[in-house]
Image (tube, rainbow, N blue to C red):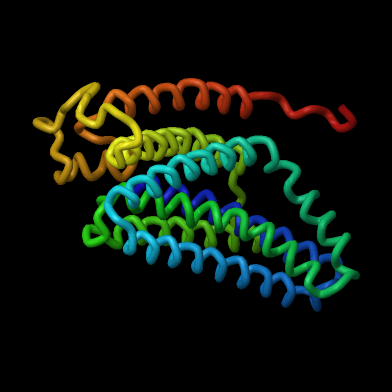
Amino acid sequence: MLGNFLIGLREGLEASLVVSILVAYLVTSGRRHLLPRVWAGVALALGSCAALTVVLGLQARQLTFQTQELVGGSLSIVAAGFVTWMVFWMATAARSMGGQLRGRVDATADGPAWGLVLVAVLAVGREGLETSLILWSNTRQATGDAVGEQTATPILAALLGIGVAVLLGWLLYRGAISIDLTRFFTWTGALLVVVAAGVLAYGFHDLQEAGVLPGLHSYAFDVSGLVSAGGWLGTLLKGVFNFSPQTTWVEAVVWVAYVVPVLALFLVRVRRPVPAPGH
């Protein structure tokens, strides 16, 4: 699924860049002996993210259908909020991220051992926890609400994106490649705004199925006769945009109300010139 691949790629690259900055700064500043603390923090962050994913999956199996829809819808809305925050944060903080991380390293390197571990946990764990929640929500939507309908495709797509991100991060660290990170985060950010709109709209659809919101059978459009939900086109549109052949008015209004202002604000943000030092 392209949506999951993009999230895995983008979040994975953010985490890879964070680790690369931490490792490179410790090596170049003659503090290589502190590297085990960084790797310990990275391992702890990844373990926490994996545990969160497992807990979410196990809890979903024990809930009634209505409760699953209520929880799933609520988490989808939260996930859309995480994506939005992530996109805007990277649009403004990417250029200063290195300096901030180096400052944290300097502040904790001579302190207790857990200080640098905590820096790595917080720096990597933020991306990882966001990714776990977003991917759980996306995977649930892309493969059906029933647990028995889950497939490995969305997870594999996310893992592929993370794998590509780790490779890119390593190549950047080794100096083998050079990419325009500003342009990369701009394009992926715009695409993820559309992905987040689908996640948000589907979250409201879940709340309709849970009986919290009305209008479950009031459709803005119904193209199920042209686009089968189980066909290749329907599966592709579902995986990328969370598109439903039978879209309710609530879903349609939420999607438009999100995409139009958020995408416009994002494009304005990324085109804003960087202030000169001291301003």
